[in-house]
Amino acid sequence: MPSFDIVSEVDQVEVRNAVDQTNKEVGNRFDFKGSDARVEQAEKVLTLFADTDFQLDQVKEVLVGKLAKRGIDVRCLKEGDLEKISGNKVKRTITVRVGVETELAKKIVRVIKDSKLKVQASIQGETVRVSGAKRDILQDTIALVRKEISDFPLQYQNFRD
Image (cartoon, rainbow, N blue to C red; front, side):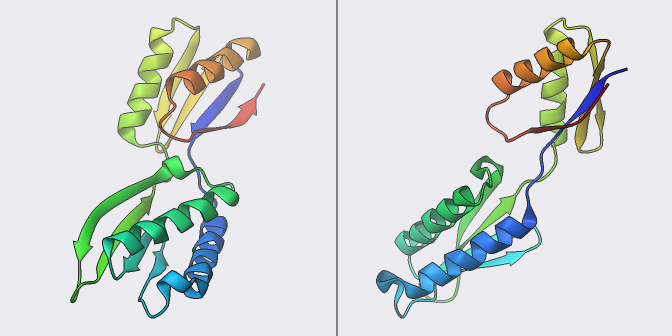
């Protein structure tokens, strides 16, 4: 029975490269001279540091640009709250979301079932597996999910006949 998986993955190597490029550019820019503006990465969490709110926004803008140039969909970023740290300095955490969250997986399954297409959708951990009788119906399902779910980056893998 033909099937495919709906997943959400981010290339961590590209994220690391974008963080390195951002730190390099921030270190070279004139408006950041003498400031403590930087980006640190720990697993799937990026932490932005700066002296002021404005500089923090500038660092984020540079980071988003570098991620976009490296092919990382910026819709997978989830911003945390602005935190004040020692003195006037501020920081913000940005989480890189990987995997289809349970809430989104349920929404995808609901969209597929409401469409009355002859396919079965099941949640398997952080992926959604869709199987059906014909390849054409699966391709219609991919088109439907692409149209309905536009606020989160999804990839369609393991297409099997």
